[in-house]
Image 1 (tube, rainbow, N blue to C red):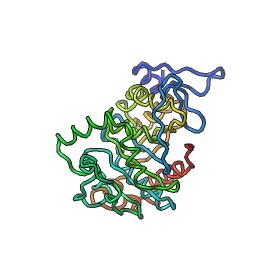
Image 2: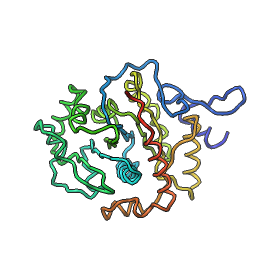
Image 3: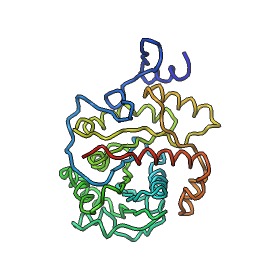
Image 4: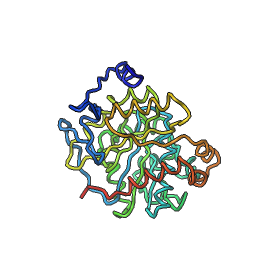
Length: 303
């Protein structure tokens, strides 16, 4: 038994093959992904359909520390450089995006503004390559708990606020969400056209795919379910174990997996509050980001 099959067996996953012994297939997100990367779940209950003009991209993860916020920053800058109009939205109470984008931390943000029934439009701040950023803002724990309790009973909260921004079909909203199963995750999934599941090349992330399957299922049964793509972040080409884990993800998903290679220049950009694509534009990680941007530029399928 090779490393990949051994690891999958350890996680309780048996790989089945087709009649020709090729193209290992495993269930993921309730069904085998189609050629365009979209997935469907026949047993899931349809999510509430909320029509929005802009394309909405949600970055999600079960595990923390996988570089989700960093990718939100890089993709926002990359799409803006490719002629798109981007609004980056922080749905994570950790309020990390203001560090990544180098914007003001004094903005009230969407957390406090929502509790005060305020509008989001004045919260937009200009950042890298001309993209707009809306931060979560600082709130204390009682305020966060109040907001989360409220949102459990207001499933259209995010959709209504996005609609109030008056964005056009030529714009893209990229949403950063907190890791794990939480109300912000489900609010983002309820409006997403594209979901990027961010993982790293390790067994901990590989082992969360079944949990993610269950969390995504309610959002994949509607008339226009989002396209779901797995992105392995910080792949280290010099590390044999990292490459073995990439192969394990391929076997688990039954298809090629999107990758972003490790590049310390991206971490250095965060430390200095500068655009990460300024330093990696001509490097492997920059090529990966550009490929992801090309994928996200495909016109949305929603009416």
